[in-house]
Image 1 (tube, one colour):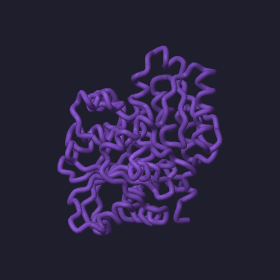
Image 2: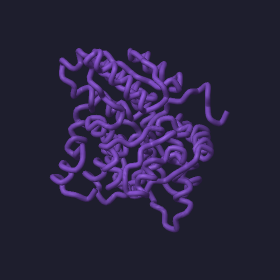
Image 3: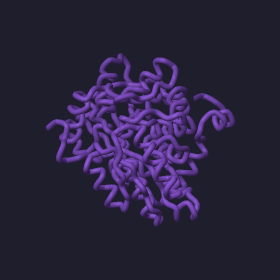
Image 4: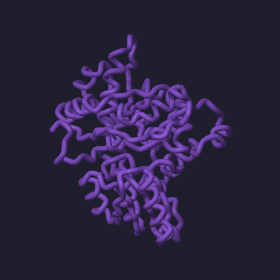
Length: 327
């Protein structure tokens, strides 16, 4: 994505200025999350790992950044009519919480197989849940029906400029905290976080490599990069529930043009890494975060000269404690 600012604004849904504006807009309502290190993890992976811990963000995930930006950009009339979205969990909770803060009704469409802990979180933030079949088609269908019935504003979980810009504030903040990173690594689900990361990195350190990570059971971005064209997700099978979503038409161009490599890890590798992090660093992270560290372990282990300072975005920590993967 090495283009001029004017070219970027024409080719992509979000510019660096959008991310900066989002950072200023949401500064008073989000947490500036910490960056953690763990010597045991460094030894295991084989290099220095810096973890941007969005599991300490409000609602337990980076999604609160994008949700807050999108809700804060709504007009007073739109807030009165409410907001509608569809999500398997973290975006649902984030939209519900951001809407509650401004007195806006949140209609949340959630797949029937969403974890109970994430459903409970949505309800605690005042969100009105409508369950649907665990398919993207049904999620979108039910959301549109609610939108038509209520006049609510649709804010999808990733394929939206305000969401992408808000998620980009995470990497923007990260690079200020650790300005000497040699590579930035982020998970890829629908691509909102990765797209925002691409924009932020391109605006601050345009030569900084960006690696994405997916589970082997939901590797549509990896396949899309190999084929050079957008390949939609079909029948994902992975414990990384936050990464089962397909890329969108707004997020694919960022990944196509700016992500240097997409790494993969399977669920067994992810489970082992998740348990390791819980035990050694005492951080509660989701499988959708552990997969990043699991893939890095394989990648770094195969390199003759690995990067010395690796930045990893830890997306969230909303885990169903009654159904841990290693049990």
